[in-house]
Figure 1 (tube, one colour):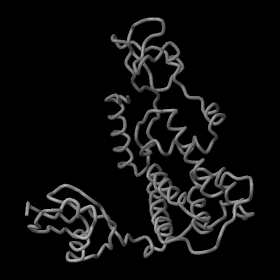
Figure 2: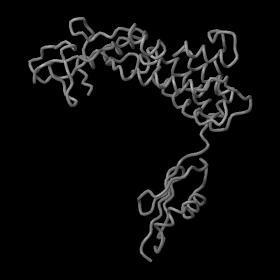
Figure 3: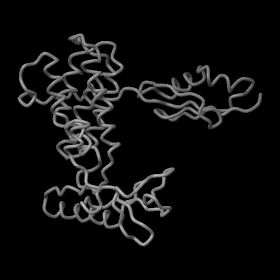
Length: 300
């Protein structure tokens, strides 16, 4: 359980106020978990043991409270970056530090977060390169529309987020893009290369390796940033829910501009909706384009 001290919240507010006043961005402090007893005395982490989700001073029944505090030698809660790089790699460390939250926020260090970033890089490698020893084959065909759409959406968002130093949300969008790439039946060159270019500022080592495997000799540092086609990033479909007497019975992906009559017809023809209309009389249909169709029924 994360417990953020009031002073940490105040510290974040102070940093944001200072940033607004000076026009500069003040980065937030990274804290670490620490422990204290009922009297408020701090206990070094090497003297703490966990039992059933609770924390105790080793060899005693004295329960401790988990808090977040500054990293210090006395509390023995300092995270050595050399150890992290040894276990997870420099790219995982870079990603995690940028993914922890807004750059100016005070936030606690959690090693499990590093593991998550490491797994993401593993999935990214599989989607672009694969797990086989054989060299991956890339096709120059146009990727499916769904892949193209998320690709252009990602270029737009990551570009904007980097300019605004919102690195955590940029990485989230890269994860969305990679999830779509994992569904590809082929390795389409354009999405693969675009993904690697966007990943490069966050995880340069693995990105450079991927770029080389994609068949390029020059460094990504000298490659132009990808440009988005905004027309291809537009959402043309929406998910609507079909209800019977206010209860959701089915969902469907439909054209964004589908009119009320077509939506109502689609709902009435849905097999799942028909099950709940069996033996009932339709009183009326409430249609909200782009959102829902509610079929109001009563016993026949």
